[in-house]
Image (cartoon, rainbow, N blue to C red; front, side, top):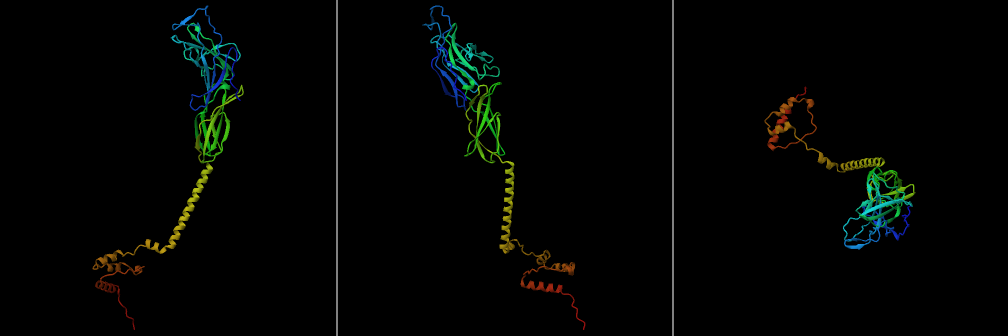
Length: 382
């Protein structure tokens, strides 16, 4: 478990407090600002007697007021010391600031000046000593103290000393970034980025996934070292919601700094192989049952309405082409030609159609037909 910030009480330091402030970074909870009232050490200046200097036409003591209201921002990899600027009234000369640090209870102070970090004679009331790829001033488990003073030409202010802190104890961790979820066959594959980039020999992150079936009970899976996590054994075609949480682990000091949960996001799993096979079988069985029922219904309707179906699908009788031509022009010897071309074996009819004619013409046709079909009659020999 993380402990409270280590507050240095050496010297004539007055009331010092730790105030959490709201984070200026989107997606984060709160971050830690170490806020304290001013603690001033004896000024390290040479006043050369009792001579006074004039600022803006007014008499003043030959020293500067110390910076006030120091704050330390520790959020993710961000480490920034800030303070209220020193005001000189009507004096237009620029004020610069100098920041120093020391380790633990050591009495040796060092200027905050390294590759990529320079807080010597700066004009802005802020010193950013965040680690970068080129410079790391101290290890995250070390106890660090800071102090700052103002300077105007040959004038310097008393030192303002900030309470000591340990990064691993006091840092606020943000949620994982860039969460990307890929639904799988009864699973969810989660990929994301760490809250911030970890430098070599720094603490590492452990990740936990909080997930639940929509309107279900929440479950927690972890810890994981990897930023790629797969949730298995999920129900196919179900919607799951999840959140990811990061813990900063400082092994040397045995400190765990948990961060907030990420935003809730929900995804639906896809079908696995077993579910796909079951679905194919169910579709095939359903189709077979449907076709069987349709065939049975059709058969029943045909049996019940057989006469009506026969009427619908039965084609009316048609007159042979030669007869039709003969009826159009009875003078043509079509019947004689048919009688000569056909053999007795071919004279077979399956059906006879009765064609109506005018009465006189009908008698002529019948008489002609009888004469043509009548052959020589053989008399019996007595």
